[in-house]
Image 1 (cartoon, protein in one colour):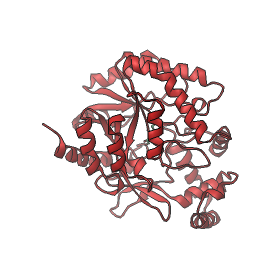
Image 2: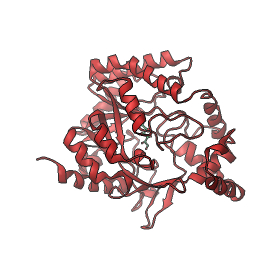
Image 3: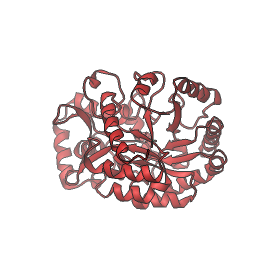
Image 4: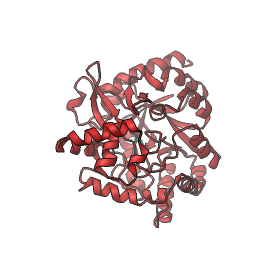
Length: 388
Ligand code: DNO
C-alpha cells in the first residue's frame, strides 16, 4: 500500500520535509479553511497541490471534503450544496486528485470523552468513557429521553459523576467532546464557538424526525447525484465509518457494521462509491470483527486507516490500543489489503502521546512521535507481506 500521512496544511508543526524523512509517500489533507457546503476553488486546490508536489510528495487523498448538514438532513439548501460539492469534485478531478474521504455522521464526527487518558506505560491516549459520555448527554446537554439510551450500570455511574463533577471538569468534558475533537475536522464547531452546548442543541434539533431510513435515503440521493462526476474523473469516494460505530445522542448512524456497509455499497453499485476501511472505528464496536469486514469489503475499499482499539462490552468504554494489539487485528488485515489492492493509500491513524508530544500543539490523536512509532510498526508488518 502507499504510505500516506494526515497533514494539516502549512500551519502543521510537522513539515512535509520531516514526512519525507520518515518514508511517507503521499499526503492526506483538506482545505480546512473552507466551510462545508462551499465550493473548493481551483486556485486554492492548485496552490496546496503545488506546495505538496514541490516537496517531492503527492496529494493522495482528500480527507475530508465535508458533506454539509444540509445534505445529510436533506435541508432547504441541499441542492445548492450538492451542486457546490460537484464543482469541488470537478476541480479536484481536473488536477488529478482522485480519492475523496467523507463521512455521513449527523452533527458530530468522531467522539472521545478523554483526550489524554494515562496508560500503564506512561504514554497517554484517547479514551471513550461511556459513563462520562452519558453524563454529558443527560446532565449537560439535558437531552429529552436520553436516559432510555443507557444501561442501568452506565446510568448509575453517570449520575454519581454528575454529583461530584466540578465546573472545571465539566468545561473540560464539553471542550473535549464538542470543540477539541471537532474543531479541526468537521466545521460545525471551533475555538470561537460561543456557547457550544447551545449550538450543539440547535444542531441536534434539526434532526428531529430523521431516522435511519431517512438518513440512508439522503446518503443514496447524494451519492446518485455525484456519481456522474466521479465517473467522469475517476474519483473514488470513500465513506468513513461512524466513530464510534453505534447510534449516539438519539441520532441515527448508518455506517457502523457489516449490514450498514453492505447497504451503502449496494445502494449505488459503482466502484466510485467506496469505503474508507478504518480499522480503529470499526473495532471499537464489540459487534464487529474487522478481519471478516476487511475480507468482505477489501475490493470496494479506496483508503485504509490503520489503527486499533479495544473495548469493554460490560462498561461500554473503548480506547486506542497499540497498533500491534487490540481488536484492529492489523497483522491480519494488512495482508488482505496488500494482496488484493497493493496500490491503496493507507495512513497510520491516531497515535499515543509520547516522548514530549504532549508539549506540542498537535490535534488530538495526531501526535508526531506516537504516530511515527506506529508507522514503524505498520511498515514492518507491511514488509512481511509485500511482494518485491
Ligand atoms: C478522526 C478522523 C475523522 C475522519 C472523518 C472523515 O480522527 O478519523 O474525523 O477524518 O470522519 O470524514
